[in-house]
View (cartoon, rainbow, N blue to C red):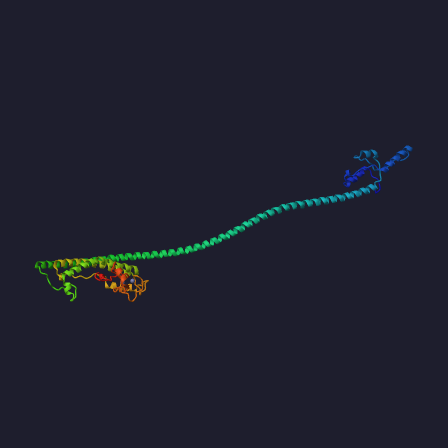
Length: 419
Ligand SMILES: [Zn+2]
Ligand SMILES: [Zn+2]
């Protein structure tokens, strides 16, 4: 096909197909030149049938345009150079437009994709925001928890400290308790030993008593036999006896049976308080001394004294009986005044002298006041040598005749009324 030549409709359609052009976009209209030409042709045909027909190969057998096809003969050839150029131009435009459209479509697709991505990202962003908030909340709660934890830890630490202290004090108490238990068992043992000793002492004492009783019995038997012979003779036997105590100056007085009897009776009454006083000394010693040996000795002394006192009382009763019957002082059984042993009393005296009191030595131990030089005083001469106001001691002696400090006897009964 040459440029400027004419093509028929079939060829045109082929071209359209070849270039992929939508036929609907093409509108065929009547060519005014052709119409004019046909008019002229018809006119000339009418004038003369010699005019040859157009031999163009362009046929307008367009089915979509029946009007046109009816107007144009199918074998009509037309010069399509301008149309072709226009068409090619249009086609080029079309192609460009298609390309642009494709590009636009692609761009739109990309934009859509981007928009979708953006939407997705926005959704994700929102989710992340939510997550962030949740995380922030979690962090806040964790911070709270950690604060709580540290507080609890501090509490635990302080409790542990307290527990440690308690444990330490408990251990201390346990140790104390253990030592007390040990002390207790030791004391129990000692007390058992003491008891054994006391039992032994009691046994010895009983033996001694038995022996003394036997001796006394013998003596009494002898005396009774003497007494009966004297009664029979009805004259008192006057023989100086070495058993009877008394100095040569007091000989006469002590030989007076009536006086001796009075004296013996007084002595008997006095013994009711004698053991009480001795027990007082024992108690005092136990309360102030920690010397186990001395305490043991005191216990023994008291048991011994009890035995001696009993013997003495028996002898005294016997002597009273003898005097009542014989009126003979020489017949009297020998009597030794019971007392705590001098060895024990020495030890007790030393202990009491060494014992310090809250009251200074310059003060009276009864009223705790200073002893003025003009004030009359009395001293515990036998044992502790404490000094008292005489007026304070006189009041004290109305209750008992012993030293308020060491409890040893300070006065004889006869002396007391003289105060
Ligand atoms: Zn005294
Ligand atoms: Zn006083």
